[in-house]
Image 1 (cartoon, rainbow, N blue to C red):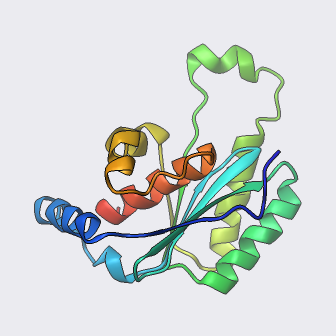
Image 2 (cartoon, rainbow, N blue to C red; image 1 turned 120 degrees about the vertical axis):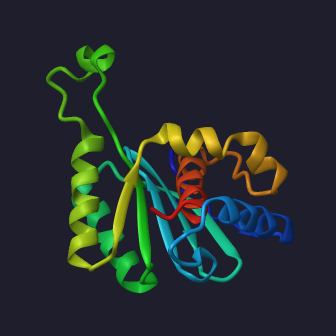
Length: 172
């Protein structure tokens, strides 16, 4: 069962900001991601949700998103209240070796991603998606632990955090 009230908050350390600066030296971003509000999602029946407030704080939580209409309303409310400069969500593909698992399935995650993209459009929130492997490879558990930002116990929240941090490093 997802606890919708469990929110983990992390203050980003000088060590993190130094790391981000070194990444930006090698991969100069078009704008400074330290000063913008970001929302990131790991969509599914349980959706990981992570936000960066544009200063120094990251929040990580999980939402029960089995009901897409209710989840959509909650997301639109969040986007209208938080007004992120950007939203990043995990992309999803049906791979050949998984096609039998998805046969005759409504593929909830794909339907939810569609609702996420509509919510971004309706609220005029810039939105991009990225496959999980990119964010997970770069922001592995070891690196999250090194910076003291590993939300243990929030598996989907941790994946949303990886997307948020990857966007901070490589805002494309």
